[in-house]
Length: 289
Image 1 (cartoon, rainbow, N blue to C red):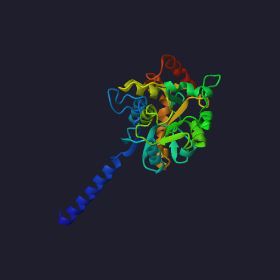
Image 2: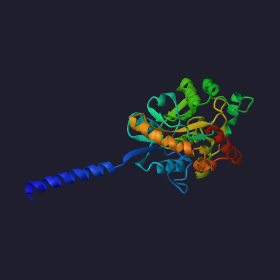
Image 3: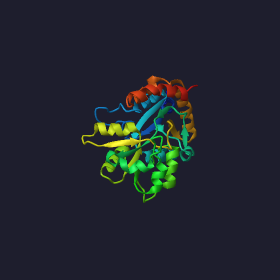
Image 4: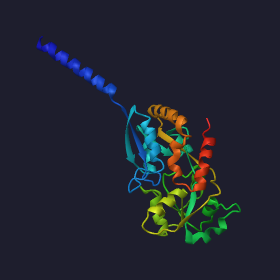
């Protein structure tokens, strides 16, 4: 064998090895989620056991053809990353018309109770003028009145209805917008320091924060008149051919599993007994195939 033929065989072998390696390499999905207890609990004794984390792990386990990377990001960065067209996804985001232009959405796979107004309990009397006969409180009326101040998170969706109300009526006179990494926790600390008068969030979020805090916080939540239906949660990926392919695969998983208690069961741990007892029936009705 001549030296030149040996070099050619070596070159062909390297090409073959490179081709095999490339064929075996898995596509990478970067999954973004926030530091947002109790949906995601990133530290402490409950680390990894938030509401969404078991669902996230389940979905990822059903996509073995991909490599997976987790990144912690606030809501603003998550949406910007998806809109930038990177190979990125998020397991739990709400759907809005604006986001739908740049985000590839799955079918809804999870339901959460409506967002509520969170206040300092000592301030309850301030909200009596906004209470309706059915016991709910009108966010629109509160914002229009300009007598109390809302603190809310930039980039977070509170639902299509509430997002629209904030967009229409939030001003420098009646609201404070923040972009904190810890989302609601930061807002609740600011609420306690009286940086504003109320914020928005889920009852289970406020309950978790009060349970884990060494300081004694005295918050309470109020139902919102304009938001009395469950919020649908979606998987979202970049609106590209790649993202469309991933979502098609994810949808097959969700259709098969989203109505099973083994899928959504982590949420029941954060509900009161009555709400937890009603939830399976609500899911079965909403996700009836």
